[in-house]
Image (cartoon, rainbow, N blue to C red; front, side, top):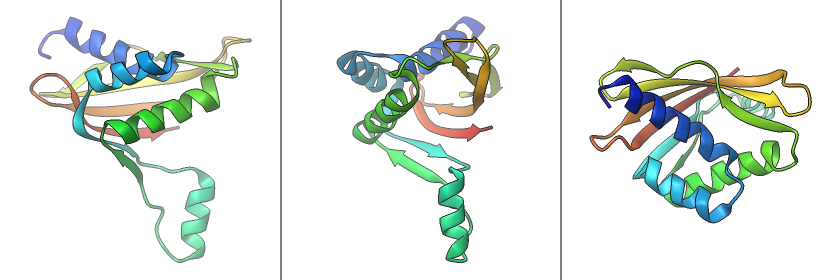
Length: 142
């Protein structure tokens, strides 16, 4: 992952998995991109979860999934919610950046298919293994 081409290619495939309509292709892409024991962490969960935690006097917990099966469910659910209805698509928002060896930052946008307007987005910080597969993904939405 030392050259810019590899980083950009990896980031592009990372964003593409969220838009992939074919379940078998999406699952194969996940298994190719992620280490078997990888973890995806939603650092700042949705407001309803934060409110429920606060009502119990807990700080808002990060949400996480671990392993290919759970990652497949997470990516599939995001696809079903945002892309499958034909309302949105996920796009890279600029080039990925190397933050430190084997750690890259990928900015992304959720774009309205109808207007082209950015309606959401975030930053994913991906720590990669020696083969370039994602070990950890800390996703910051907003």
